[in-house]
Image: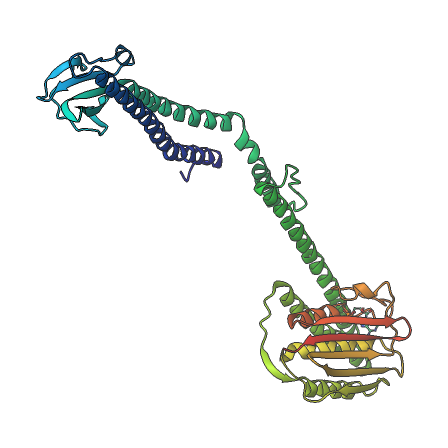
Length: 450
Ligand code: ADP
């Protein structure tokens, strides 16, 4: 069975199901019909017996019982017995035992297999005195042979129906047609195996199970192609981002190695190499996090964190680090906000937002960090009076490697905000931004506290 193709399997199951239906239904039909026939014969026998009783009583005593020519014509035999159990009138079928013991007033059967009789014995009471009895015998050969014939017909009909329906299914191509999308799916999957992700089944044959399967397969391919494209773009973007600092390092190292240089010139080369190395380092750690966010392999280390204290520490750290930038950093933090969080991820999220606010600021600008708890919501916001973001760029800044204001800062890789959004979503949070070119921006991250 396992090696059969699906077409033959369906056909076999179908035939088996039909056979089971016939096996269950036909015996019931047979029983109902045979019961009906026997009951009909019994009713006839009783009515004939009634008539005979009447006829026999008509003759004032037992001398000349009228055995009723009509009854014999209908195939019913009658024999009148004396009180001493001797036949005194009428006749019985040739092979019927005339001495069979009477069972009065109860329809019973004599004979065997297909050669049976329906028998009714009745006493003859004349003027209140038993004068003998009579026996009415109805051969059942006709019913038996009709039922035997019916049985044979049932067998033949069952066989014909099963063969015919199986033939119809195969030759009419019902199964083949119903399974055609499966073939298409196989063909498409084979083509995809050869590296072509743009192939689709595009099944137009309705919405049955196979149609739904084909549509689901197409949708899966859409998603697969989309993620494959994103991976391709990601690799291309990563190579592009890494090439810039690597080129700067190589150029500076080569330059330092050519000819004699003053100590100051060597220092300049080394400074650039160090700067580019640091950029690469930060880029690589962002990329690493990005890659983990893509394949879902980041293992969170959840702990109860005092977000208020941590935010305060980060603000102080950034203020110290950028004290010469001329940008004023202020904070408005509600105390005692505790949340279950991954500390590394929270720090990354906040550093990314503050770094951006500083990076895309104006000389003597300002940055404001705020952490507030409003009922069950914790709201973290980072605002700045910097260069702002154009309306056109706003919806795209969360995308990986998207850089608005490119002309301003060319070295930023465009990963910070996509990481911010990923981290927020990891903890059931949401991100939003309001910004106006030339006026500044306000980034907000909202978390629900359970
Ligand atoms: P990156 O800063 O590395 O370029 P991000 O994903 O952090 O990447 O930001 C995407 C883009 O959004 C940036 O290129 C920048 O143009 C814009 N942006 C982000 N934060 C700000 C901000 N506070 N003010 C103005 N522009 C911003």
